[in-house]
Length: 175
Length: 81
Image (cartoon, rainbow over all chains, first blue to last red; front, top):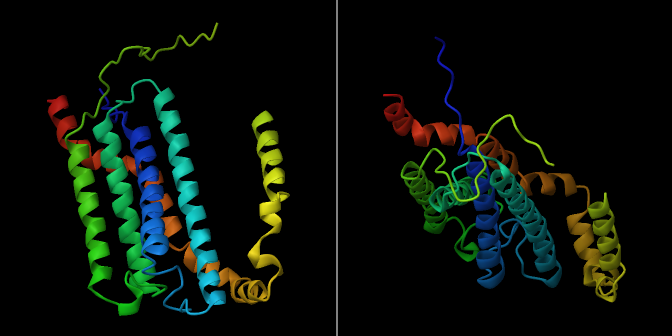
């Protein structure tokens, strides 16, 4: 008898969580580092924010970056809504939290590697230039991914029937 | 369709508001300098490098099946047994 691949009931929730993690992690970076602490801006290693025009230039590109994080967060909300409508998806806070941590960590790793280390668009603490803070940012990404994977491994992979769940099947009458 | 119409009306209302006409980038000397810096010949390059992490992150969202498999292997194996 041919062995069918196992279904992936958690996948919609994982996709939603990862998208939300990327979006919210990006927002946290933008709000805390770019706006509140003003440690760096999008192009602060290329065009130093020392005049009003140069600050506004960096703010504009911070805004483009925030547009991407907003889009990822919105996509995460849509995916979460879709996951909630699907029967059989295990509705587990630990799974969602784990996926969010993986997404947030991935954001820190990818953004840190590309923007801080490869392209040198900015550094975590711009007045120091390339510094240990850039590596700490990457390490925070790796830690978040590790924590997220640990949470996912300890959360249920299959659905536990919840109150109000409808068993999946061919009958899907809306009347 | 109704949602799209509402969104279009909302955008039109926001863009025609007094807040939008107060845009400091639009009519000032500094604004002209910023526009020249940001939307000059290097605009596409700036956009490209700003959004450079995006394809990798989007691929990660699309590839959550891999995450699913890598975090449930042991449970599935024990289920099968």
